[in-house]
Length: 316
Image (cartoon, rainbow, N blue to C red):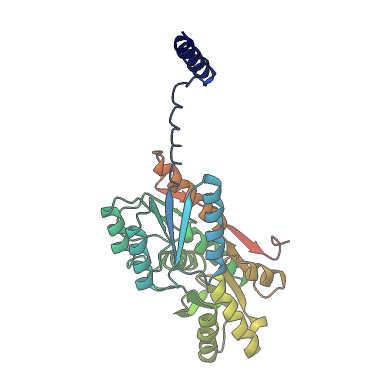
């Protein structure tokens, strides 16, 4: 009898113990991994040089646009060396950038790089300076021919239609040098026959070369009434040379780009005028145009950026 009571008690205890155990629920659902964030489009910007404030402004405008649009911008500097630019573009192609914005050091030398990008399926855009071949989606630049004519008209008027003028040319082979020179000489030939171009020499868009080249021209030319330089860096160097020779006051200087130093020279009366471009706007438009194209939008083949003339009257 006791044995039966003990077994019954043990069974009752087991039931009570089981009742006290928590009821197991269904296994927790597995956590779903977060979807990876979409990769940013990557745009390569190959600049001719960052030793020129003009192209520093262009880069800054491009970077501001890239940040605003959420794209990654890789900037490479060729330091005015076509071979270095070709190598840096090849590197960008190998990295698999989504688009390329090119500012050629040489409009002919850049063509193989454009064609390499075309073969890799990478859309190419040019800014400020054009490429002479390959497939370009869009070119963003000022009308340099119009700018050259604008400079010529000002200089012709300043000289009263008469005088001896020196033209300091940019890097041979660049579209900017070719187009600015074309516009300048066309206007002078058509509208200012009393002006004689007594010297025409390249100083490669460089201030130091502008100084040394113009030093030599000053020695060779006893009479110089005006100077047109294809950019401000060269004309500022020429002004330094003329000041050192004591001849600055007899010469009317006209530049191109309206970089900060040139605008200050206009304020000080050393530089008569400079054709104002908008490099920061060029950089912004180049990135915005590339992004629109990557998103499937149609973009114009040429996007002009307005010009203006900076003189003692307008600079105020």
